[in-house]
Length: 168
Image 1: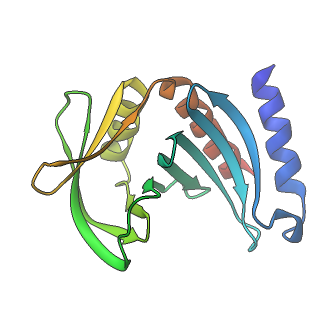
Image 2 (image 1 turned 30 degrees about the vertical axis):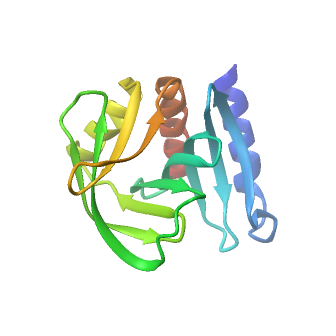
Image 3 (image 1 turned 30 degrees about the horizontal axis):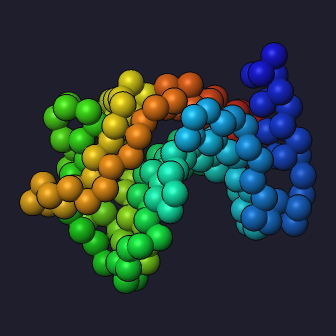
């Protein structure tokens, strides 16, 4: 029943005109500190977003109908400038680290596009099964940490949202 409700909400949002989609977001699912949304943009396109947030920091995963997944780290206390890049590392629980070479920095956010294929799916799978995600600089020094409690159910809805966009 919940899947049907999400599909109806997504279909209703996608059937609207581009003008009604300006900065429009529909929440599909919330669980613990996670929220999954479908977001309509002013150009008529749509994206799915899964985000865990606590206070003024968040870790988000974004994807559109092309299923390219971008991750975003946000902290209102950061001042990263505009247009810079950084080499960062991410570790989920005690699993091997992921290297994010040339991650884009913009004001309070860091962005990185996951690789297509098996590596990207492995990262998403680790997020689903993980308890904590740790962001570090290229020297391995801790920058931020994010709870992944509730990520399994939330990422499943995120994947369902991407599938719905691809079929829409």
